[in-house]
Length: 379
Image (cartoon, rainbow, N blue to C red):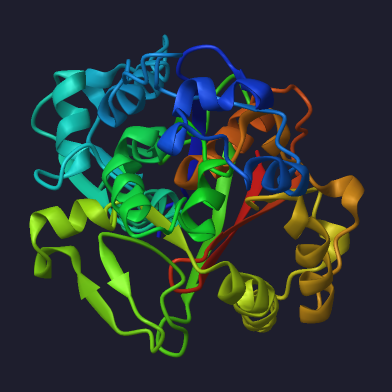
């Protein structure tokens, strides 16, 4: 089996940073009213700024998902790698610009390159790591010499107040003002951005690389109900009805294409099913030791979960002190599938890494409770 190396990591953040007091100037006011949830959620998640593809005031998107992804990939080009040499492209995102065709094909179109292998990885936060693992497998098996994987999000397009107008108007008629907390909650949690990694079968000759030692992905969807979703309705018994089963006006009245989070289910189960249970299993398989880990790079959506993650790891048998943690959540926000790329991009290009250091990465997904751990070595 070939060894696999991450030889370059780049990110693309659209437009200027958006600070907390500006958010509704970009996302808009639902029903012309200020959000009651906004300040509560922002105090909890600790995010100070984020990035949106939307134009301030007009709410018009200035970039598509495919465009920000392509922009991140273009930054991978240097004297050692040109896009014309690319063999495979694998892109992950929560919500592509369109239902069909696949996200990766649209990114390829933006890049203007041909005769490459492609994969579009679906899911939520794990779609970015799933895209990465596809390229990892291809190089490890000797089928590829190089490949690019990405994670990207343009959540602001879905969180835009225009998408809730029909529901807001409908609920006003029903004497039930405002949208559900489960939808409003996410408007202050999610951000836009894209990250890209170049993977190759040989390390950089004149600079550091990250060797991927392993990537483990575990899902608990067989026993856990749906928690974060879009494009469907979920009743009190967790029965799911797809949006295509509704009349078009009803889809709009209920804003079924928006993103919704079952906050109660999330808070009760996120630690057990994305931290404690999987890390126990991974420790049995991989024999990880805290003293061998130089950096822990965790994706979590909110500072609210920081201590819960620490305690969950400790309960699972791997206690990693906070001084080893590396995150940039407060400055770049929760960019979902792009978060692990955006964190690793900063660390990789920080000049802090030293040959021999080990990096443990963690990416959870609340869609139906899945998780991933990835182990890297600086070479």
